[in-house]
Image (cartoon, rainbow, N blue to C red):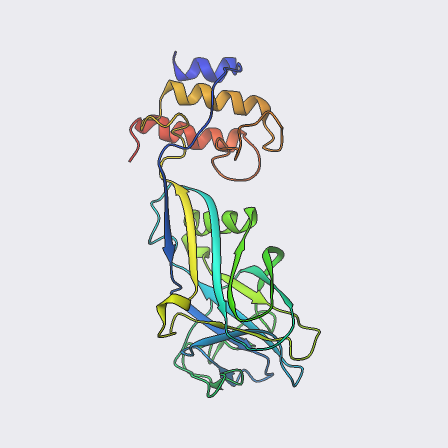
Length: 289
């Protein structure tokens, strides 16, 4: 049956939706740093082996930032199905603190500053460093001291004793999808800890840590050919028939929708005309990859 006939009829056709070319990979950051509360932006820790989030003993805030090269590792057009960020807490402090991830909305840098000891006090800011007031030291400023980031939290985790902690959520996967689809706006995430309780700060290993086993890592599950809904390594009439079934349901929260809502090709929570544009583009290519 021709594609245009599917478009005009939009009838429900039975079938099972599933992913066609699932894959996964794990990335380490390409940049990380700590925004150290300081009105002059005179300190940073760009090259340090630790980044911090929370409130220290002097009631000064620390916020970590990190970024991954998603667009350089995952093929264009892929659909992100799951994302999980794992960090190693090495703070040694007693007590729980909720640490939230927020998508950063402006570019920032990592310079050669390297703090002494536990690195919480940082060192003199160096060229390219992100600081409390600078996106890029010495002359590119944050619009708001402490960083620019989305108001919606991408994921959260209660961090307690030393060890590995993993953040994962639907929103985190959507963040990664946005990093892939719009690489120019991939600024990574900011980590906010408990900024009320004194000495709540948590310390996480960075990409500069010599022990590769405790560096930050982002595991990404993705589908290389998301429009191949029946998994036969081609995007054809059979896939479009399955797409129409989901299109008629519309809302990914509908109990009748296939688990994972795979026909939601742009991961916005609905199967609609925006997804239709995606599958039509893939249909024109016919063969995955």
